[in-house]
Image 1 (cartoon, rainbow, N blue to C red):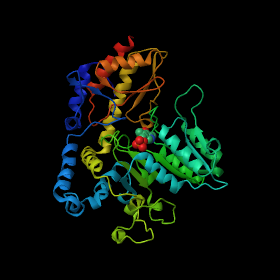
Image 2 (image 1 turned 60 degrees about the vertical axis):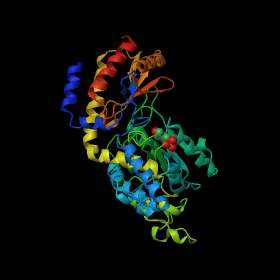
Image 3 (image 1 turned 30 degrees about the horizontal axis):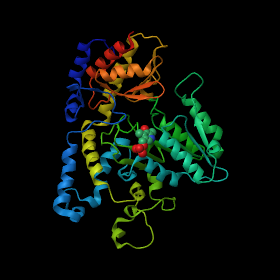
Image 4 (image 1 turned 90 degrees about the horizontal axis):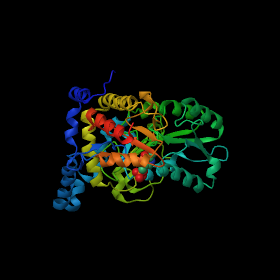
Length: 423
Ligand SMILES: *Cc1c(COP(=O)(O)O)cnc(C)c1O
């Protein structure tokens, strides 16, 4: 694509954008009486205008029906997780029975580790990416300790080559082969939250399985951002949150994927709860846990209706927009952002993009390493009405999302960035 560094060009792309009407379905937070330039959907997605009414409906059913809402509500609460299944599955490339929405992300990661990290004396190592999101690091560290192992020995971190910021795909596969015979699990992000690098989940899963290990991904930054094909890739398990790209509100519910080859295996160790128990017998309240088939068998507690109502409203929007169309726009939007930043011709000593340049190795986010006065630059951007996010020590993450961001947003951001850097 031949981009141009003018606002007229940006507006022209917006005119041609077949997804442009989706922006009006979201509340754009105002700053100083005007729409902000919101480039922070990687951290907290914006509120769909339909979210409030969806929650209101559940309030009304509770108000009017009390406990009967479980059976006679507009969306009977008893089966709530099922209303999300089909659209959630489409989002991540899974079969309906392979996904369930429940709990929060880190909780679900622990539940998956209970099932898929069963170390033996010979096989006890976990491969993960260095600098993974802290919650993932802590989950792995404490699970390893729970099994009486030393994290220093059991957790193998993939690190970039000296002087580089992202991982070479070959290095990942080589590390898997190197530790293969001792490897119990590969658990890493589908996209690294800091650099925005997308990992080749199909290749990693294949290599992991060849080594005899399970393979799972944290898709917090991937769900609703890139195209996923978890079933075909043979991924064993995955977890994601819904409040980032999936716009389902702060602390929103989490998605979990368990491949069908494991979903009907009652022998797989797991933590049980009554909501994962065979539905027909659940209210007989008898002894002996019999999990429901599929990912639903990992449920513990009755569904959190209010956050799930928001998520349901949000999934409807994704389903209308479709991931392939969103991804096509996303590549153009992020490509435009990259073009504009490169067009500033700022020296590498001032600012550099650490996210890979190949579109299939990144999602919508670009991570900018600001070498000089990073925090001041970030503060200037904030004062000018740009909402984005700052990660210590000196990274600004910029995430134009195809659902509600425009090419004009990207153009205006780049213009304000240029002024803030004074290049
Ligand atoms: C956002 C994020 C989390 C957050 O975990 P919660 O349990 O939802 O608080 C965890 N891991 C990754 C990779 C994330 O990006």
